[in-house]
Image (cartoon, rainbow, N blue to C red; front, side, top):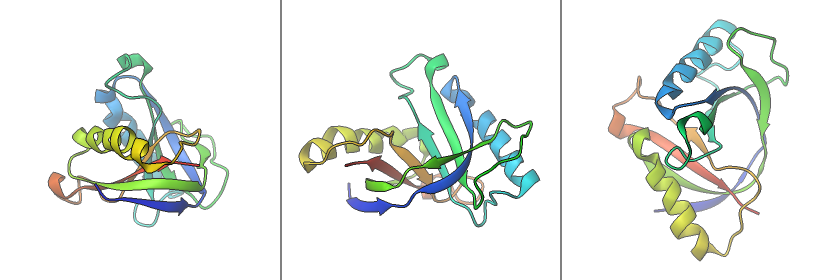
Length: 156
């Protein structure tokens, strides 16, 4: 696994919070996509798309799983909307980043490698922010095996 240390800039985001079974994340993603299309405030073509998991779906009960589905925005306020999309930020700072290739179904392999193998041998310490994903491309644009996702691990 190739890991780089980067200085991640603070990102203004709009996001929808998914709470519940991981198998239903696509339902929340569909709401976020519909919001993007309806408002134009975070266009897929010119905005970055992130996922922020606050728990490991393999170790928490389905109802305790949380993942924020995010897109970058240029303004800091989001009008009230029926999709439940709100404004927030991904804080800037140092991050270890590794590229995940292929299906999102096994992204945990890259996350576990960062936490279990890279981190203990790196001499680095975690910041108080969860790992997060930058989805570079999407399944409707490329074959599943061509998906690219950068996995960020915030460090001090």
